[in-house]
Length: 168
Image (cartoon, rainbow, N blue to C red; front, side, top):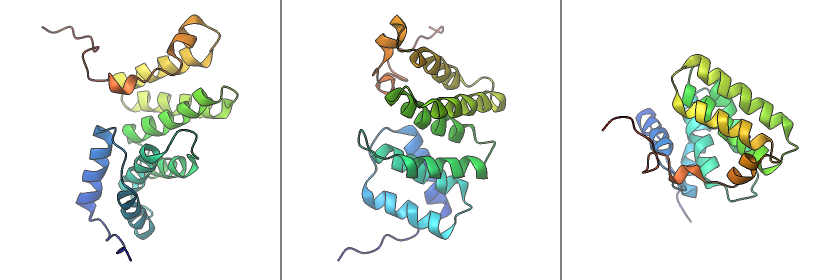
């Protein structure tokens, strides 16, 4: 039988969270279980809840139930209301729900509110402006722009050659 994953230390949780933020890789079930163990032991730890939410979100297969990821990210936002990255990640998950189901007006409204809160907290956060633009453009699939952007996976290009730089 497989050993139960040990509880992560606070520094390991923060490292795992930062690693998840920086990558697009799918975490292993062992990594997810270790984060679940941390959250179970420390339910008031916003970093652990955020890391678990991100790990769950990244481990989802298309069409999978994202409720646990949303629940953990939402709990992290409640525990750390000034954490811009948590607002953005939760908004992105809800935005994805809306993209997959145009009739899900609740998720659109919630993601819009989270993006706006993130901008109030950090007005110079470029990713939030980008995501807000996508939310507005994709909300109306009848527009030419909405149809062209539908299904566009920007994550592989963020930070890549398509970024426009004004410095030489």
